[in-house]
Image (cartoon, rainbow, N blue to C red):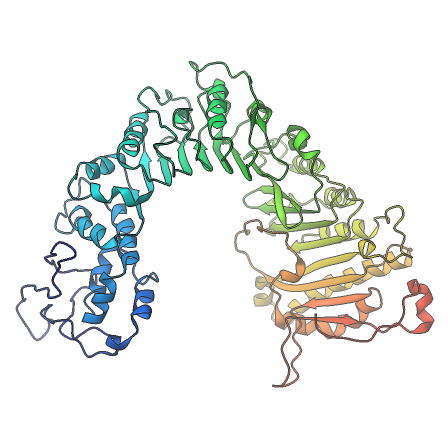
Length: 636
């Protein structure tokens, strides 16, 4: 698909000036003046009647529309040349309002009242884009409040399209900006669905005078019936603008007082589903003229599904989240996300009433450095209902994170959990590995008496993984669930990631496999010692062999991280699977090497994993608890 030869540009970023007739009575024939021809320069000509004979003419209209709206362009001025490829493409483009609605969004990002480029300023092209976008809903993403005011003043051109505006995002710098945007919303944007007033140039300045709310208008529920999402500075969040239709609220820097905050929440409490509080601080510590933050009520939030709180950096006062949770009545299935952003307080004590009604099935611990962070994720079924993150500030005299790790892990021991995952995403540097303490992690695993599955992921740091695996093997069977019953709830599964760094492979292309074999040999010895000592026998062992790099640590997984979901190295797995499958098979009922590909010819399907069930001779059945013989099988 190429444009006609009569349509060429010397510069891909240059768009020739065109004369656009009012929509829909526009002309299909656009003309520009010729430039002087020379042997080294292409002429710019749009005299073609868009009747090029290129194959693009014969594409179905549905396919052309799909191409035009599939992010083939990145700036608003790039959409104009797409209408000049041929007559067919121009007809489809002009008849595709989604294309122009997206162009309107990108054009509003470049609006500027001080731009010196008036020739192609978005203010001049915006009327055409708005006309062609009808009847699609519109989204405006404005850089500042004066741009919104300038658009409102274009009564004859822009105002007729405000009824289609569903999303508005604008940066605010002061209370006057918030008041100006609020007045425009009330007077012109009655069909608005989401409003984002992002506060800029105020981070870390909580000592400044508070944003005044005297000029904020009062919104009636019937005036903005469709508004469901609101992002606003916390100091401007009052009952006057908290309409009852709000389902998602995001505040920054905390409120003026808890009384004002709770009063505003009470107005939209029945519909509220998501509440996000960024840089939350105790309001009375920073706002001298605010009323006292006495908890005079408890606001019920029956439909709340997510509560996210990020505390202010270096914040040490526990009263802020304590007062917050004391004033809220949360449903049992709400997902709570707390980012302490510093040394954490006792989260279980903070949420004592709420957590007493929950019984977590799975727990995931993620340790990373750098940056030095620890996060715990708790699940009921497949739903994450609690996430707590902390970034410890170590004592500069000790530089020892053991006390932090001990306190953090002791705060998150949930005896009802049957699955535990520990992800060691720590770089192999001396100052980083100090965050991982073998005995502390071993005690953490031992605090889960009902554990039936343990997934050990990430890098192998010292003997931390072996310490946790031993603690898992030493866990006794719960009362009434002795090994003789062999119920599904009593079977133990260990997922284990063995890793080799890419740097080791580059430095020692032959001997790097010995590092992997050493890890597998140590794990085999651990299992053999457990069986010899009469410990509980593993039902299933899932092994995953991976390469690790020196890249920065990853973000915590969004779901419970199973070892069998890790992308394994097929080459490394093929080196060791055939050797270690029978060796582990003598110690475990079922052994799996994730990513073990067995190639047998073109008629066989390649599996992502291999399972080997080892045949048990009759002379060994007594020592294995009377388990009958099994046939060998490969595949999941």
